[in-house]
Image (tube, rainbow, N blue to C red; front, side, top):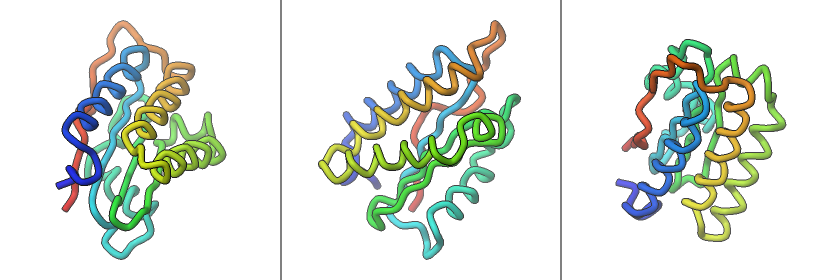
Amino acid sequence: MSASFLSETDQQRVIEAIQQAERHTDGEIKIHLEPTCSNVMPLARAKELFLQLNLQNTEQRSAVLIYIAYEDHQLAILGDSGIHQRVGDSFWQQEKDTLIGHFKAGDPAGGLVRVVHDVGQKLMAFFPKSTNNPNEISDDLSFGE
């Protein structure tokens, strides 16, 4: 699986970052890891996965997918319409650059934790936690083949 990319300890660290980020927002963050993007562009693959993982079904359209094809050295960050219209392309590009910098430094978990924190801050600003805040999307990492 992705043990060569993220150890079990690092995976747990990233999941804890997701849980922490979602504590203060109705937004949702999902990370999907797979070796390759199946001969498609990473954003196209992220859009496919966004639908497969039902991320478009959050009440406020505030889900964010962080997609990594670690053997291909490809990634994409895709926010649903509710969050995207508030932060725009430049925010996603900045976060991609943060990930790339950490990956090049050999710290993929640190990069994911940082980006989850940054995305969580934006989600908290635009979609603060309400009294009825169900966790609409599992915090676990998802994996492709």
